[in-house]
Image 1 (cartoon, helix red, strand yellow):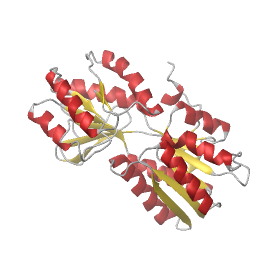
Image 2 (image 1 turned 90 degrees about the horizontal axis):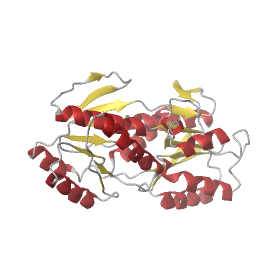
Image 3 (image 1 turned 180 degrees about the vertical axis):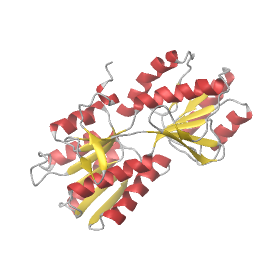
Amino acid sequence: MDYPRSDTDFWNSFIKYVPQFGAENGLELKTTNSQNDISKLTANVQSLISQGVKGVVLAPQDTAAVAPTLQQLNTKKIPVVMVDTRPEQGDAFMVVRADNRAYGEKACKFLGEKLGGKGKVVMLQGDLASINGRDRTEAFNACMKAGYPGITVFGEATNWDGALASQKLQTQLTANPDIKGVYMQSSFALSGTLQVLQQRGLLVPPDDPKHVFVISNDGIPQELKEIAAGNIDATVSQPADQYAKYALQYTKAAIDGKTFKPGPTDHDSTIIQVRPGLLEDQLSAPLVTADGGTYAGVASIKPDDSSLWGNNLGG
C-alpha cells in the first residue's frame, strides 16, 4: 500500500486503521508514502513490484498522472485497488471512495438553508487536479445555482494547503466583511479558518448574528469537537476506517480471483460502473450537525453519534 501523505489528520487516521484490517484479511503489508508527489508514487510502486507484491493499494492525489503506473501494474497482472480517488484513465480492480459530488451538495444545502438562501459564502477548494476537488466544487456550484441563486459563492483554489486556505479566506473577508458561510473541502483548512474567524471577532456562537456558518468534509475528531463547541456547524464524515477496511478486503478478493459487479453491497453502499474496466464502491458519508436535523431533505446525525469513526479512534 502506498499512503498518499501523512501530514493531515484524515490520512494519519486512515494509516492507523491499515494494520488492523490488513491482519483481519490475512495480508502481509508492505507500505510506502508518496507525500503527495506523483514521481515518488511511481518510484514506490516500482519498489513494491520488485518485492513481489500480489496486489497494490493506491490513493493518488493527481488522478491524471497515475495512468502509466496503472498500465504497468495491469501489464504485470497485479490487481490495483484505489482509495479516495479514481483515475482519469486506466483500469483498477475497484475504487473505494464516497460519492464526492454528494459532499458538495450536502455542504450547499446546509449553508443554503442556514443562510436563508441569500448572502455570500467562500468555498476553500481542494486541488482541482484531483477528482475529489473537482467533484466537490462542481456539485457545490451547481447546487447553489439551482437551489440558492441569491447566494454568491467565492471559490478559492487552495491545493489542499492549510496556510494558503487561511490566507485566501483572510483576503476574501477583507474584501467582503459580510461573508456568512465557509465551505472547507477538507479538514486541512480547519485550524486556519478558526484562527482567521477568531482574529476578526467572528468566532461566536451560532445564535449570535455575527456567526459565520462553517461546514467541512472529513469527520476527524477535532471537527466533531468543534461542532459540539459551536465553533463550526457541520461536516460530512468521510469514512477513514471503511476506506482502510474495504480497500484491503477488495485487495484480498482480487488476489483470490473474486469478481464484483454493479449494485448494492452488504455494507450500506452501492457499486457503480464508472466505465468499462472500472468499478467504484461508493461508501456512505453522513452529514454531521449540532442538532442532527434535516436540511433541504438531507438527514444528519449529531457529533457524538457512536457510528462515526471520529468517535472511535481510540477503540
